[in-house]
Length: 232
Ligand SMILES: Nc1ncnc2c1ncn2[C@@H]1O[C@H](COP(=O)(O)OP(=O)(O)OP(=O)(O)O)[C@@H](O)[C@H]1O
Image 1: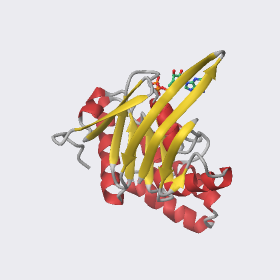
Image 2: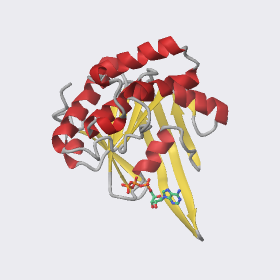
Image 3: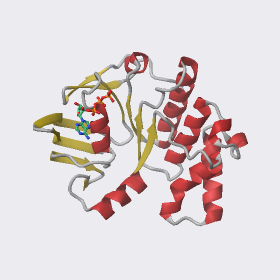
Image 4: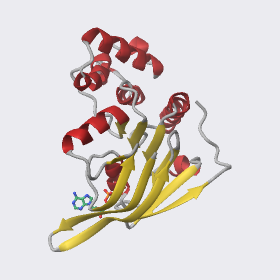
C-alpha cells in the first residue's frame, strides 16, 4: 500500500522556488493500478521519483509497505528499492554491450544471488515477456518493442511488489505500444503487482480505470468504471 500525505517537493532555481509537488494526498492499494498524466512540467516525473524512493520529499510522507521513504536512512532506502520496486523507462536503459540475458541478470547481482540461479531466473523472466529465443542478442539486434520487453524482464526478475513505469511506450509505434501495454497488464494481473505509469498518450489515459492528473504540483484522481482496460 502506498500512502502519500501532504507531499511537497520544492526545487530552488536561482532565487525562485519551484513547487513541483504542492501537497499531494494519494493512496494506491496493493495490486492496484494508477495512470498519471498531465501537462509538461506538471510534476509527473517528480511524483514518480518520490514513489520510487529516488528522491526525498521536501515535506509530507511517502509510505510504502509501512516504510516512510522520505525518512528512512540511505542504506535502508536502497534495500527497500531493490526488493520492492521495479522501474521501466521510456529509453529502455539497457547496457549496449551485454546480451538480453546478461542485462536481466544485472538486476540480481546486488541481491547476492548465485550465478546459476541468476541465469535460470533471468531466462525465465525473458520467457515471460516472450523473448526466450532472443536471450543471446545484444540490444542493437532487437527492435524497440523487444528492447522494452528486456527492460520489463529486468524490472520484474527480482519479483518486486511495485512496477513504476515512466512513459514506457513513449518511443514505440502504436502497434508496438499496444503489445507492450497488453504485456504489462498481463504481468500486472498475473503477479498481483502495484502498477503505476506516467504517460502523455491520451489513448492510454483514456483506457485507465484510475487516472491521476497532475497540474502545477496538484493532483486530481478520477475513476472510470467503464474503461476499456487492456487485454493481456
Ligand atoms: N532538479 C530540478 N531542479 C529544479 N527544478 C526542477 C527539477 N526537476 C524538476 N523541476 C521543475 O519541477 C517542475 C515539475 O517537473 P517534472 O519533471 O516533475 O514535470 P513532468 O510533468 O514530469 O514534465 P514532463 O512531462 O516534461 O516530463 C517543473 O517546473 C520542472 O522545471
